[in-house]
Amino acid sequence: MLRHVMNNPVETSVGETAYGRIRNDILFGVLEPERKLKLEGLRAAYSVSVSTLRETLNRLVADGFVIAEGQKGFRVAPVSMEGLREAAELRELLESYGLRRSIENGDIDWEGRVVAAQYKLASMEARMIEGKDVDIQQWKNFDREFHTALISACGSAALERAYNAAYDHFLRFQVVKHNFRGEQAAKEHEQLMRFALNRDAEGAVRAVAEHIRRGVEHATQTGI
Image (tube, rainbow, N blue to C red):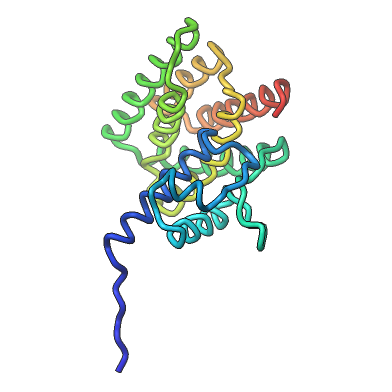
């Protein structure tokens, strides 16, 4: 007789928590590029079993954030200009399409999400422009929230998942270099919001493409 085996909900919860924490630490450079990921050290740091860690790291291999080295174990994936350009191209493709769809379909709730997200991001960027200390992770979370809000009325959960994955790879490069372009970037975000609220799809798509490309150009000048 066939028997359906249920996953232990406690183990699943622990595994998801470990996955989220380690992934986040890779994105924000706590676990720096090319770092060797030793299971015993990670077990103590994240309070999970070695078996859970192996499952977690294999998920992160599939996501492209960790490299499996056979019998040698795991290490954090490196960053490179080539990788940045690939991530930027994919992000531009997905965000442009999602933005166009959202401008066509978005209602007043979508407009509210865009305005609220841009307000938080602009407040953070103003502090950075003034030279004040900020939480880098919060800054990038606000940046993600704004760009995610822009495409949130696209009507495709699959597109949003793909976009979030592409954004995370792009994010790693920005965090490694603390890649803030100052007042110019803040103006681009405000302009992008204006295009979206005015339902100017062509202007918005052009603006987001230029915004992403300028980020890549800035990273190229500063080096990775």
